[in-house]
Image 1 (tube, one colour):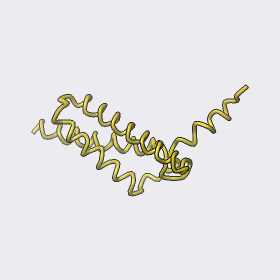
Image 2: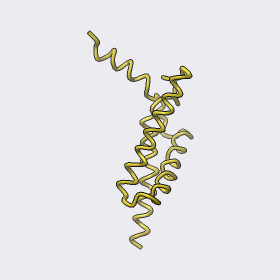
Image 3: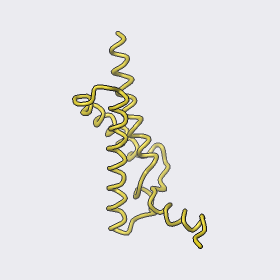
Image 4: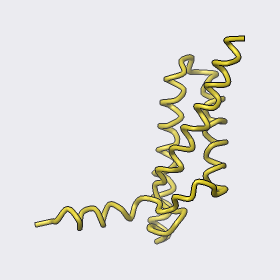
Amino acid sequence: MIKLRDLWQKIAIWFDPDHDFRSADKILHAFGGFAVALLLLLVVHTALGVFAWTMTIGLVYEFGQADVAHSQRLLGKPGYGIGLVDLAYDGFGALVLLLFRFTLRLL
């Protein structure tokens, strides 16, 4: 029988253990989320849609990074794998753009 702890250890290796909120990688994700949301504004006309698509694209990007890290046997090392903090920064960048856009509409 598989124990929950053993199952978690097999799953946890896929996640990025880097949780430093000030690293350059996180700042790049914030700018990336901003840029992706800016491009999505051309085709998606609702804020919720832009945010949802930005997060989806960010998640697909993180899955791609995890796949490359797996093929190079780098999983479990900081900076490699599915970064949930990275994904949060993608969303933060999109929210900054959407709040800026909302503020401009109020003026």
